[in-house]
Length: 322
Length: 282
Image 1 (cartoon, rainbow over the protein chains, first blue to last red):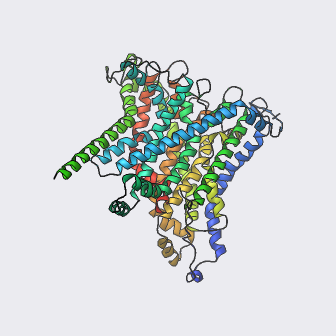
Image 2: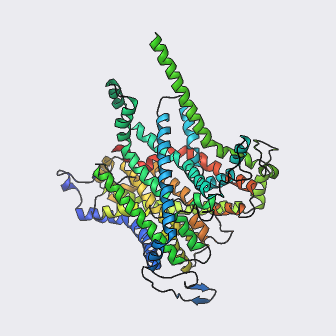
Image 3: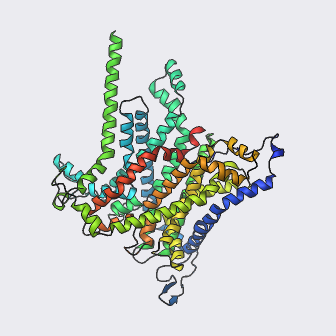
């Protein structure tokens, strides 16, 4: 994931004469990009535009046109302007969901990064059995997320789950992991952290290995303490990788669907529901509220875009390449 | 003498602490998966018990039941088909774009890069309703092509992005040599760069495969008949609101997770470089 502009194709003054004219080269570039641009416009652009339009209407399952057998029922929904958005933004539900989604994202990404960095630093030392540890620690990432979600639902099951069995064996009472609002939140965070640390660990390990050893040796000669070496060599050296993985991790976590949907089903009583699963449930459970769900979807996307722009600007003002 | 001894002792202590930490972390990482495997081998009265037991009357009954009496084989075939089709289409469509944005600077370059980035942020909730309505209008609900179309919205930009990262690592001199030999830019790409980029293509293909393989939301919303379920949806049927067949669930999970994990562990090193390519070479 990079947007560094390394202008590899810029013709030097000497080479210019031999190259095809700029127009011809651009023609090729555009032709080569055409498949993706067309697919994206048709499959993403059109639904997006339609989603924005739907969010300005009162479309539900009842008012949406459909075809039943030979009969076509026309749509009867109407344009209602921004009232869906107004309704959402002023609802208590929005602030609760947003608050929990932000908490969920920040806690998860912080733990991903912290634990991932810690493990990466341990694995970056000369160490016996290093490759064995590496493989074992990557395992959670290797299991498809929906399988992991089901595993955890079983482990955390109040009655038969091994977590509670161990707590009881230790003389502590069992905990209603998935049926208590607070513990359900703790549970989904724990599951997501378990899932996400391996990726961070591998990415940061790659970053650590790219930091030249000489820097550490020189610092050691100068008598820098381990903490100072960490602060002044490791952290700055990791920044290009860290910037990318933190942004990716934030987007992934913010949009994390399977963990919440499959582990707690958003419950109990919607307490662990994040924005994405909430919008989904509105569209596909009960009376399908297409317009309301579309409005939530647009709001979520807007939040993410704003976040990415702010993040990117922050990196830029600090002089990062990205 | 004593200084050396003390240093040796400290190194031993540090080394013990290091290994202890890694062992604990490894146990946390491996335990849930190991427990899954153990549970899948237990008969009903053992997984429906609140006592902790590693083994009790190990049996393959759960596996026999999953493979023989449930729709699991059907779901497996469905998932393989959808994921394979998504992968092939995604990689084919995205390869040329990845190359173009890696090599050329042209008007519109920045917008395309932004488009690729922003589409990756699209939460499932933003597109799912309009895509659902669109597919419904086209009669593609509960049809595999409908699901593949939905997956292409994610995998095409993603593959293009990953392949750009890989093409960036192929030396430009090769392109120049191709052009000196009179190849068109497309010819250079097709004859020289693509054969050199097989590892990059493989990683992009693998990534889009597992994206489609493990997707839950679109599959749950679009596939309404249980003969069309993918694994991610089908497995949920084993653990409904009222009764949970943990034996079936764990056995099918093992059947899915083990081959996936083996392939994954083989390619993971490349996956990470694919995602963060370029960032390390700032």
